[in-house]
View 1 (cartoon, rainbow, N blue to C red):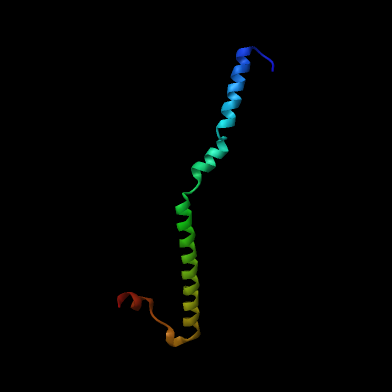
View 2: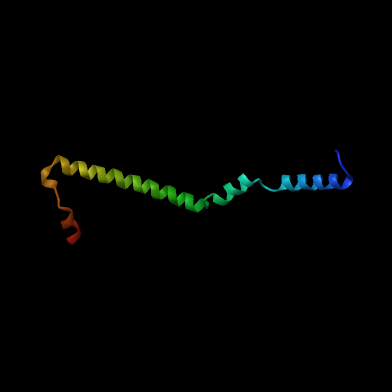
Length: 79
């Protein structure tokens, strides 16, 4: 190493601090990461949403195939 003993000590301390502290990118990623429970809940809700979307598509196809199944949407909410 080049420099005075004080400079060398400072460089050693700085390298120790740099090794023990996460980088800015790592810290950012950790702070922005979702809570594991929220991630699980989000996945469950997404799966439920997909299931509901498939069911709605299936119901729409039924009403398109048989005219007697045609129901006014307003009737569903007033009953």
